[in-house]
Length: 260
Image (cartoon, rainbow, N blue to C red):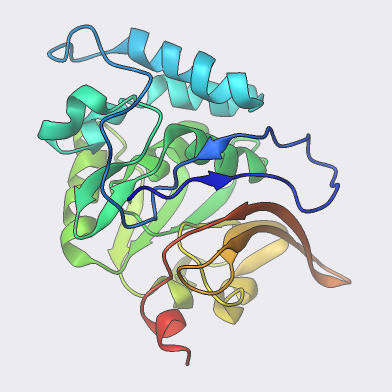
């Protein structure tokens, strides 16, 4: 059963108000129902620009995402190349889609929303925890050439990396590993985005975050309602956090899952 989460801010922040909407989160392990608002007129079309334009207008900008860089990225990335062939007809629908290994590709809106929270200007070094399909990394790569992505499920890393290469996102660096530990070889990172829930913000990720850097991560108990956190590493005050939305994600695996 698909779980529906109403995304509402838990307190007033400097970010613009989050629209009240039912969200389907990609990291929820669930079966996909037959609904959806966007169906391409021609599944054989290799470009599908019209589908992306409709997706951005109705699902993303229509719900309040306004960063022009994010909207342009969502219009540019060929989402259908990041889903299995039998799901490509539904690639631009307003829902997550299965990509194998009990995982899904995120609903377009949540990808755009979390990307906007990173406040990218165009040259930041970004670490993504959870490569998955490769789609989130591709969206980031449309904005900055410095994207690093870690995936703990090696078969997903292989297919995600292959999709990135096929779509032309050859600057994205990927590796297999436990995202809890980050990627120390390339630290510090200006931005970190995590697409699975942890009971706390992993200390290694905080250590690898540059001064004034931003991390976006769902925090809370596994398989329960969690809080989407946006945290900034202040050089003097340390990590300052704000609660952005109520969400539900599957847990991070590896060390975070083991509770070490």
